[in-house]
Length: 173
Image 1 (tube, rainbow, N blue to C red):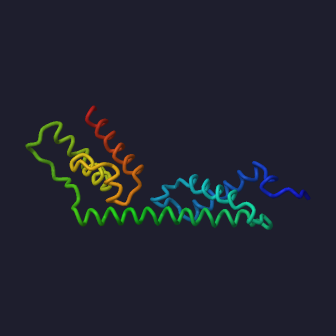
Image 2 (cartoon, one colour):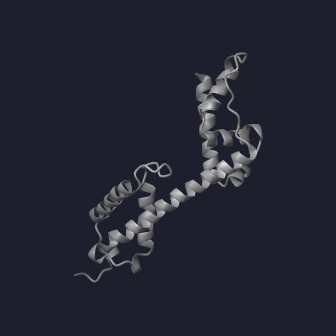
């Protein structure tokens, strides 16, 4: 047996096998949890990074490597789920405190483009409506919205951009 540390002797096939087992485990354990969206690649990548960061304290004997990485991946997935729940709770608090951007019933007097805008706005999710309303109508910056809703500013910017793109697509059709 070689005196080299395990991380220098592990093969690509073994790493791919470990990754495959983790993906199967996460799919079985969490199904299609909305906050994970069935996409476990980021969680597995995070677990592998932690494994190699702590490689000197991990003993790969008797499948210990898989158990260790599985625990890290499971904890990372749970953290993501909890963060998503906290974000949703915060959005619901903001909506309860400041009111939900209204999605009114169709106005028979509304014409063409105004009615189309209302329809597109109503088709957005609560989160998209809230963020877009604050950005466009209230004139708040993305950073202000992120602070108020306890969301990452990248997520706020991405959500607003997605909603605006939907408007552009619908109104140009």
